[in-house]
Image (cartoon, rainbow, N blue to C red; front, side):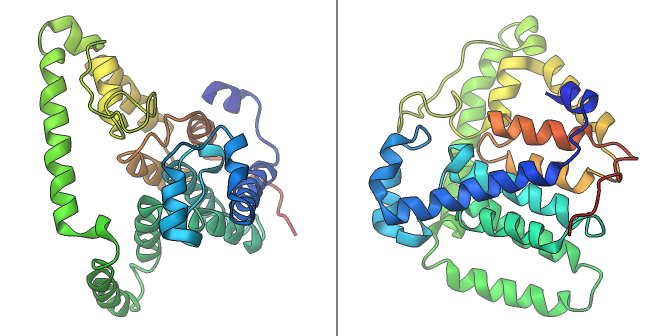
Length: 274
């Protein structure tokens, strides 16, 4: 996909991302009008009904990423892409990307959204006001949003640490496995059959286990050699989002990641939209 993006330049990236945003918004509305619509879609499982039942409008939407976090993170990346190209595109496009990311109601994309806004204001005096407000907001949200509670973070840390220890013994059982990866993987992720990666939502661990040091080094080198001033921020945010769920390893994630990686130093040739 990367080489295709480099060979055949996407002349109108706005249209592609707008289609993704519209699909997400339309699906969100359709499911709220009639929940049974999700039964004819392939990107939902048995857990979504409970989300809508308990959370209603903030239950999110899976859309083309087949997962709230995947879709939300990808649309946030699209927002960052257009936000860093203000002189080329109408501001309406970036706000459409932001809205489509927001309605996914993904904790990961929300946190990254806040981080990006703080990054933008890091050189402004308003950051002195924003940081205390953010701290107060997190304090009050802890009572209703369990995923930002310290107890939840501690549980995740213990669980992920155990995953690493359980699986690393397969990598170190011989030198070839350490270099090129192993097919022996331990997983307890049975909530939904055949869902996600074999080690749950920790996709970078899955990548390392399957490809070893050689695969990891090649991945790091390939990304590093293609990062430049035009794509640095969006690539960093995509990589961070993949610490939770398979954002860049999903098929739509591969498309987004390949396109952003293919941007070169002279990629500011897009036509400005009205």
